[in-house]
Every structure is written in structure tokens, then in C-alpha cells.
Length: 180
Image 1 (cartoon, rainbow, N blue to C red):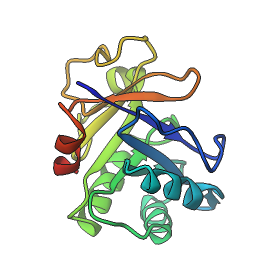
Image 2: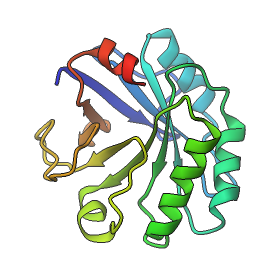
Image 3: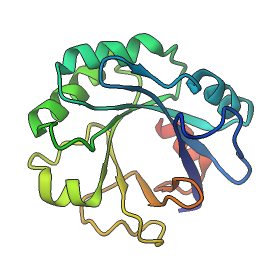
Image 4: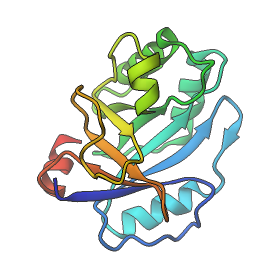
């Protein structure tokens, strides 16, 4: 693993440091009403730096169909964009999570759809082991590429200091681009 990336949301500036990174995940929506007001500018920063981009939706209780459509209606996808469900709310069931991922896959078959969750959710709340096209696991252990799970993973968020930093399970950026 030699590729690194970051996760940005409304808590980060529109223009953020991109040196040394190969990819970025940008929060776009939460629930069925919240939109990150900085996401378009954050995407521009990523694209200008040549980063592989992914976009995520923070799940909240409510109709999954409405949240999928709300999320997808905001994005103008380009080839290689990844789509992610951020599963952190304990009010979101396994069935809800799986249905959201499957609906996004069906609506966007040319884009990888991933699940983001922390190690505790994956080990103690998940009952289906369904993560769409790949698992992005958060475990802030300071050990890049060692998320403490046996399930195959694609990305590992290993620290949140000074920013959410990740490694990708790819030999290089070209392999990630080809996969995405």
C-alpha cells in the first residue's frame, strides 16, 4: 500500500492541502435535508490536484430511497467517482444499510459503491457483511493498513489528526483509478 488520501466535510476549508495524497472522499449530504455547502469547491480542489474522488452520504433514520435520491441528485458524476454510505448512526439497521447500497449500485452501475463505518460497527453491529463494492473501515490505531478486521477492506482511515487520513489497499494511484 502506497497510496494515501483524506476525508473532508464542511469542517474543512474549500481549499485544503492535497500534496502527498492520491484520493479524497468528500461529504455531500446527511439525512434528507443537509448539504455540505463547501462540497462543490472541495471537489474542484480535488479535481485540480488530480485526486481520485469519492463522495459520501451520512445516513440518518428515515426512508433510504429518499436519502439515496437526495444524495445522487446533488452529484454530477464523472468516470471513476466513488459513492459511499457513511454508517455511524445507531438508528440505521443492517437492512437499511444494505438497501441504500444496493439502490445506489443499481442507479449507478458504472461507479464503485462503498460502505464506510468504524471497526466497532463492523465487528459488533454488522450482521450481513455487505459493503457494496468495498469496505472503507475507520480504526484510529495509527497503524496504516492494519484496521484490526479480517474482512477484506479497500480503504483504512487510521487517524483523525490533524485530518482524517486514509490508506488505500492499492499498489499505486493508477491501480486505484483503474479499479474505480
